[in-house]
Length: 244
Image 1 (tube, rainbow, N blue to C red):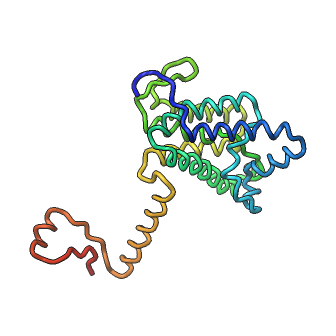
Image 2: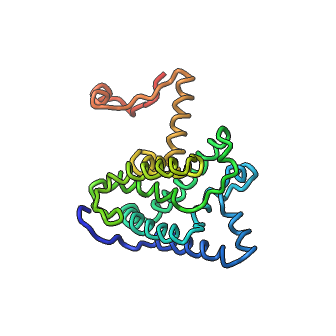
Image 3: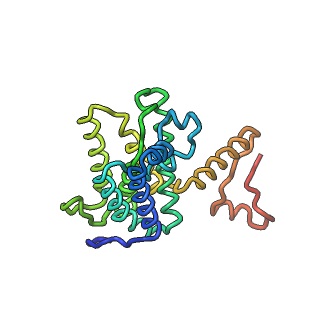
């Protein structure tokens, strides 16, 4: 991954691009029906509170600007193709939707204290592109990529992406329109580089934490076996891990 080259056009990336382009073109072509579709797809913290629980999964499929739509498709291909080839389609799609949902839920929580975000309509896959940039930087740090026409190492995508988002905040003099992007960047770095790579792993670790708390409340503790344990237990049957 140290040289330059075009990424593969993988299956998950292909269908995400098709869905994004189809939805983004259908909405302006469908008149009032398209406006209804847009309202159903767009994520707002107030809408989520009102029961639109599907919008954290759908808001990334609607781009209302032609340039942003082209950028969305190229970004998915350039970064997503390499990541899907390395991870597989299942993990890549899990990452895509997990970062989308995490960013939306984090924005939803912030909106309780930052009321300007409560009714703001969030749409477009900039959030997921930030997450993909973070994942690319973490998973393939030495890969050589082009940022527009400048060749850089992928590890620089993380600070560059954060810096671009902050600049948008400064020049627009508003923070709330860019909250999902910041949360998406953080979620991408966490899910790509940490031990919690999927929501299932997160649930498993929470379950382990809960079991450990129950054991501690009963004055039990978990003993991890090591070389000394093997020596001490030689000749005994079994290896009880829970001691009173």
